[in-house]
Length: 290
Image 1 (tube, rainbow, N blue to C red):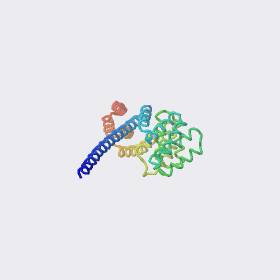
Image 2 (image 1 turned 90 degrees about the vertical axis):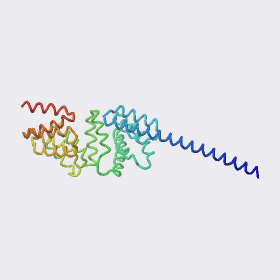
Image 3 (image 1 turned 120 degrees about the horizontal axis):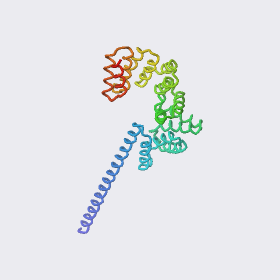
């Protein structure tokens, strides 16, 4: 009886020690996992901040650091694939994007289909490019959201030939896309001075899909055509949609000035200046000197 009691006590003691170790290990594991997640989230935030600030090199460096830390991080693979395309390294972009697609069994990062389609297009593998563009349509059939990243980064790096190429390619799949039609129209306005052709492009965008970028761009086109009434209407809509955007406020002030509504022009120039717009300051001073 005594030995049985001793064994019971020993068994309980061993179980208790093991339970404590298990709890301690679990707590340590949870703490490590939480720390890792915090680091991943922090790197993602920094990558997005660098991209927002148009800092391609820093965004790419941080994306590579994230992938080094988390070997299967789909976000990092997606960004690295994009940056390699912009850097004219599409062969290596294809490798990492294909790897990402194999890992992404739930298709959480379906934008990889878009980037892969572009990468294949860059190396003249047009059948593969078409395959992935069509796959992209399964997940996003209405707007060329993902290809916007490609177009914007080519614009930032001043590769305007590629901007035109991918705008035209995107419009094959998304003929009414607001962003791509607006960019195409802006090229007609700013480079070719084809203002009436630009208005035809603007008209392809459904009214329900028009955004502040669209209205400000079309407003500028109307301005070049000296149709200042429509110019004013469009900049009003742009300002309503994005009231803190100083570029749209300056455009609105400029339209009022062209219509000889100087008090309204001064009001909006002053508002733009309060938001740090130096162009508005120059235009206001010029108007006051007249």
